[in-house]
Image (cartoon, rainbow, N blue to C red; front, top):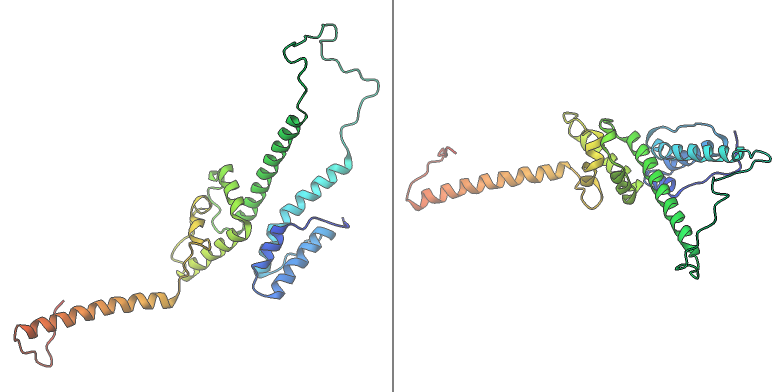
Length: 244
């Protein structure tokens, strides 16, 4: 069913921004618009599919709320008298609080807090579901608590999507010998190593530097043995070598 409008959240925008090319960004935007306005599932290919997968559950939830709202509430019965069983009893008067004015803000604040907590829980759950679809090893889903899901929400969707992609890249660089962590392990603690403030990219240059460092240590040891032999007055022929 086509609609005139739908809510485009900031998380959709952040997911699209991490894409590399304008073509990928446009494919992701177009897929989200088709699904939000025309209810047509045009899932893109490649990395452009990531923000679309993240946006799709939220669009579906909003459509469900919209359809339920069109149906209205529960119909009222005509001539219905509601009783509470205390109609014939005299009301009790509390003389201590007789002149006290009710605080109209108490119920308002309480309702606001309940609504905020409910929205926060729903957003955290929706975010976790989107992230779980992106992660390769889907084991231990029930071991991620609601508290941890709320903590992931505070970190932000774009940062966590980037952490997952970095972890996948590291697994590919290892040549496939290392299996991915269980989903529960990654989302409870493993993701921390792949956030911007902690991530150190693995490169061939870094490995070469480490190997050259080891070679340098070996050569220094060799030079030390030669120097000590010369200090003892020993003559070293051209084919002299040391057994380390």
